[in-house]
Image (cartoon, rainbow, N blue to C red):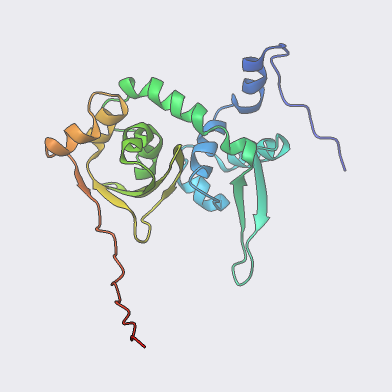
Length: 217
């Protein structure tokens, strides 16, 4: 097997520099953002990373495989396709992206005419605002589409693109409110009170109580 070329390095004995050696290249963290929503085919990744060339995306995925951030596996029959998914080390980048998104949220502003938009791109910035709902699955609906967030008892578990069956809560809002929530300018409760968001919590299904009759001897 031919020896893989050595990745560029800052050649600094520093934890931050070593991390940037692995994820500091253009597009790498955005690939992580997409794969945090679950396994994706190459074509799906390319569709949700507008602006990346096919060669660039293929190169980044190979680099990420070499760094053990991503794995590639074949789906079982009858589907004939490969998917990419994050390794546990790759999934550990969620807090990094959350912090990066929180830092960048105040500068987000209105979409520029050249900006692409996907609904699930709002998932990471919204995670902090949604944790107050407690453990469960929250489906979020925007004009741009739907995504869902899985919340654990100790915080965020993850998120996924699209709707989900039987969520614990449904939130309908708009992109402007998402930006305000992400920037900390608005709480979820205040957004609901102001009519900028609608939060629905389906009533739990209660099993009927069946009384048992005990015959006396």
